[in-house]
Image (tube, rainbow, N blue to C red; front, side, top):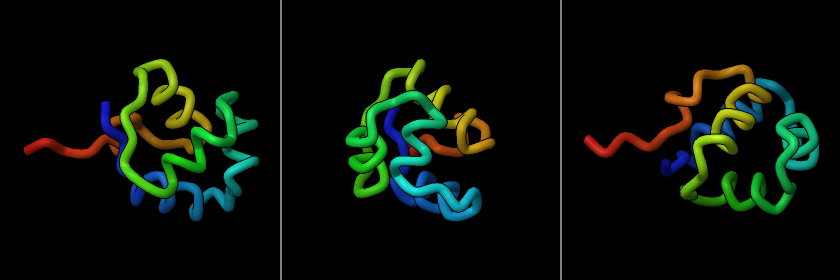
Length: 67
């Protein structure tokens, strides 16, 4: 799955999350969150699910549309 950096940044802003806060909440490395917030990244489904849960959004809202 390719995750949209823009969608991640917008969700982080809404939740007032820093990179470190989101990483802790999602239980993923801070460097992964940092990379995600700077550019579209490919993620495993498990990581995407953790990220979406921490941000309080549907995983689908973070995915780059291929259409």
